[in-house]
Length: 436
Image (cartoon, rainbow, N blue to C red; front, side, top):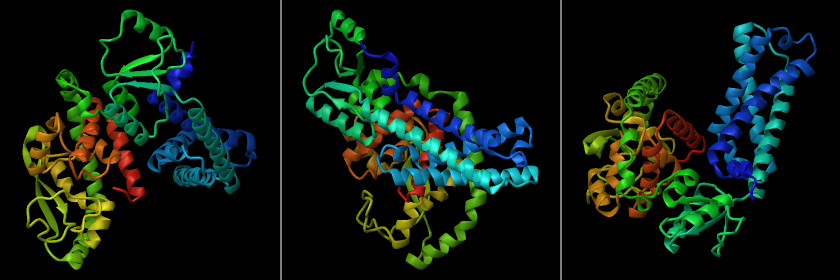
């Protein structure tokens, strides 16, 4: 029989993710404490401050490392077997964390931390983080869960595509296993009716996880394809959607964050406007009707990134390398600068910072006819960024729009402050890579 702790550790991405994040934080904090008490001479300032202050500064260092690791996608790099890239990235981010620590320490204590001590902290923290992430990578590679997809061929291909796109590693079984097979970790089924009570008991006794298509995709792929669900699943969203406290606090945070961002970014507007005029003339702004919350339409504002009269022949899908995009528009789109005027939509209440991207009415009607449960996207406010935006590419046809809907359904089912925070961090990470 399988080791149950190993199964839960390798099969539940949330457990491994939480454990990884916690250990990264602990190693960051421990590095400063270890250097302060073991390597630092007694004349160094770190050992002269109180233990309480030292723990506070160590915590700041650990939190900074966590945020930088998330922002620059260190966990993604750790899945690759490239020593230099991973080691250099970890060292640079630890160095940035140390620089912030020095600045905070100098502002609060009016003292400087010795350069040798800073080097020891960065070196020890970088080495421990590198070993930790490589351990996770090697452990995951050597403990691939075995999985059998007891579904149709088309659904099996779709699931495998989703798994590979979400960076999960599984060992797929081609031949159907027997009930007594103790090497089967996960059995995915689209119909439970053919399972007898004795079969269910045998699977559970052997430690095999029997799971539905929808549940499997939600846990391991973090998306819910519309063809995997039914009306009963949609109706179960009722309790998850109407959360008065969550909605009110989210609205407050939207206004607060947009207000702060406006103070920093609005001064760039005159420069952007001048560049647009030089590149392709007037107008500078672009107003477009979109489908918003509960199907109500509103006007969305953007910096113009397409050539004037680019839709004289009617609405057209936008592709990643669209020839209608101006030279300047390419860069505005990559950095999402073209979306900044939507701060006004957020302040008005038409949109939120995080949510499904709103669709144009012309395309929305077509997609609603072609894709099951498409209109479920409007059960929450549309967003400036969203789960689909950071996990899928441009939606330029029915298939890519269906893929986008699968991520939107996951967000609607699991929306929370933590998921919103993860989406915002991932959006910032995509900007550091200049990807949309």
